[in-house]
Image (cartoon, rainbow, N blue to C red; front, side, top):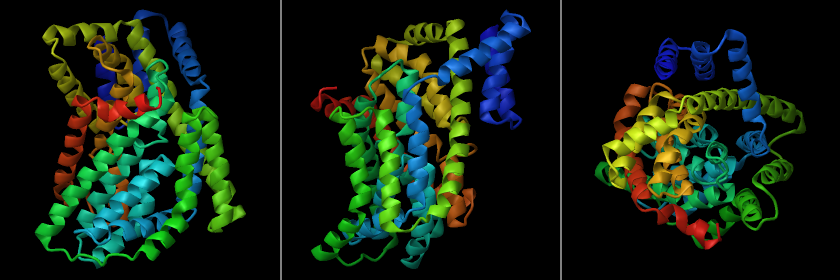
Length: 428
């Protein structure tokens, strides 16, 4: 009864256009009202929202958001594009590869797919059009490659998964994301190369080593942030939360060095960061209350029993979970999806002997695909808006890139060492 109310209320609210955070909160309260009186129901939901946000690890999210906002306006995108162009500009479909690598680097540094799609897309779309690429293909490349930064650390979504899973090591998750993220980018580059050869796109000139060195040196201070943050966490110098504060200080130093953000702009950047943080934290709070209600109603245990009653074959169960998460990602934002479905599916996969770190990467890879699909795909809307085209026109060039992302997901799902080799190498 309670499960039916929770699911039906949530679907109806989403269907009539209620924002996702409010849909989660309202459906949770309605479910509680079936079991207990109104005052305890409202009090319980409010208490669970507050306790869900009472986590030192979550403090990393506003800091990483602020660091991403500073970098988004600090001239980092153009430096990364220039560096990527000297590396891969001479390959078939050179500028498409430049877009992919620049988006991977910027997304990883900023920790935001939306920031990467906006910053790199606004810079690269016109450049790709000048080289003969269609506006729609340029948008499709930008949209899909921007999501790799959510797997390559530092990633706010992996921090959220650590919280939802009950304490999986953030350092292990960060290390586990490197190979899957890079693998996804490489598969996108293969699709871009095949498409470019079929269209007869011209190949750029190979850059001399002096140009590679010059552009690398210009981009080096930005790239160094990855080594400072991840290196500090892995070496045990600071926690992920402390690393996020270090990232903000480092980004402020970069703005001083690059001189592309004035001190007068910083209040606006801080205010924008507060707005984004408020949205994310409201999603986390309401999602944590829904997760508690589901645990109270024994929903995770029931689903575990149901799935294992179908089959005890690990291959089949993982296929069902992947299909479910892909469907969920189409209609739900990443943060609430991770918080709601981690407690549901994690017991299932641990019952099958899967490492929770491995499953975290699978979940994030799944949900990044949803960012590129309507009706909720935020990165899709940003990429289309930046390119000045429409969703209908972008869907066709997106399809082969979706296939590349699905291939990466399948490989990461069924080859655990793609995720676990690096954490194991560093003792996590």
